[in-house]
Length: 181
Image 1 (cartoon, helix red, strand yellow):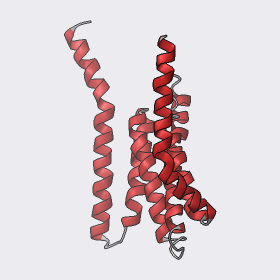
Image 2 (tube, rainbow, N blue to C red):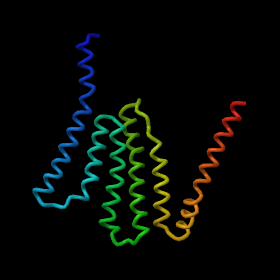
Image 3 (cartoon, rainbow, N blue to C red):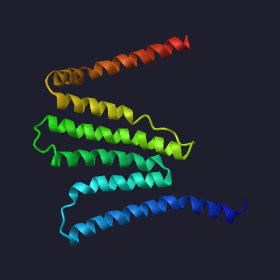
Image 4 (cartoon, helix red, strand yellow):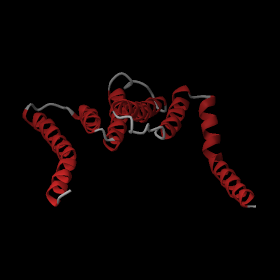
């Protein structure tokens, strides 16, 4: 392969990244221009719109690295929209619980979209790891929504989790010694 062919291959490989970044800048610029010119309050639509840009760009470029911030922004944006809309009258801590449930949904969305990437490209891995923070956030949100005994359990877990970390760490250390012997 000649140096010229290598340079062409490198420039064609860099193209998806450059158009994605340009697309993000164009959409964000149009968003803020519309907000100024039309004197609209589009603040609630900014995060979901940015999430959509990242998600669509990630699917088009087949890059999970773009879908991850898209899923996170989608969860935060949806949570904010819910609190400004249908759950505005809900009292704390339930309101925070609904926000956390929407945020957890964004983490689940990352895994679901990684399945779409897998269907598009068999070599693409399925991202299962977002289900871990998503589950923790969802459990916390559920406890806040349910209230009562669920909040008491959450309080106990909140004070006891360092002990769980110590126990798991000891198990790993002792098991490693056992494997080496």
